[in-house]
Image (cartoon, rainbow, N blue to C red):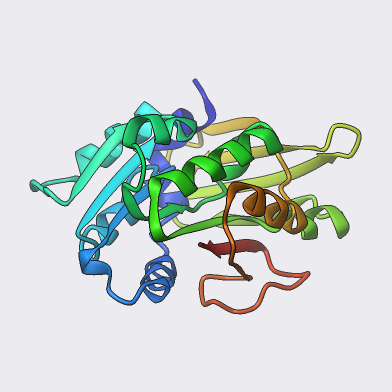
Length: 242
């Protein structure tokens, strides 16, 4: 069982919907109700459902079948503005063709699951191709400049009445890779689910380089979904590019 399959049933308890993400997306566009969006790494679809109330059409993709099963089970009524699809983020150009969307969104540190700068550049190029002329790419990763430069070894533990989610980082300088180690404790049963997954520590300077190579000409950086400026202590790195 992979990382996301193992936590799919508890994903909403770990990562409840962040309403600031919705506001962030709204502020990126003048009028969303005529636009189409591709939501990449949609997980259990919480953000996708909310976006479907704002956009003309939302296409939500994820690679993990267990996550998509939860997303589909959450939908109690037919929603012709929203569709879920199991798809690799590196196959979006082949699947959707040119100029298909007004927005491509990739939140939740999804991007750094790709294996290094070549795959990330490929994704940026495909995103540029599926976007319409004035379309925008919005994505969020962890601020790996902070992780590496300040030798941060973890993220704040997430805890509520149902779960405790411990997140540790181990950076390997020689391989430029991060081991992301998690421990999920289900309080009712006492079950403990442990996982380790490797992530690519994408830094701000490399984001700029790769987006430029992919054909994006304007990029804004933020340190949170309130659109406050990115700084050395920001936990996320959030990008709006066109």
